[in-house]
Length: 122
Image (cartoon, rainbow, N blue to C red; front, side):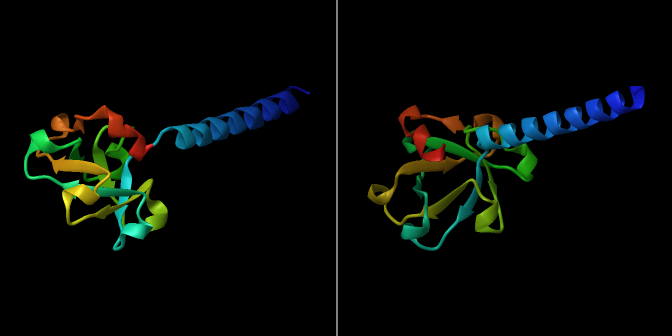
């Protein structure tokens, strides 16, 4: 009887961990991005500005997907569209963009300058 209780508790704990991991992966939106060739394929159209002060979002490209957290401008570029949280297209003109970005040198510089545009990356 004691062995049966231990086994049931183990399975219950295993399922609880599985459910927790699944819920966290659904609710936490990291910024794994994939760059598409055509505007029509993109979730978000972005334009890279020349100066930080012109940007809606300051982006830092991280080296590993595990470094991505939330909607904070830390982007990891994936190799396949199916791996991405968002697909982006780099547009030619500022007026075509949903969000203007500036690539920063340091992770601590990343973040939103215009929080009204955050919804594009949720």
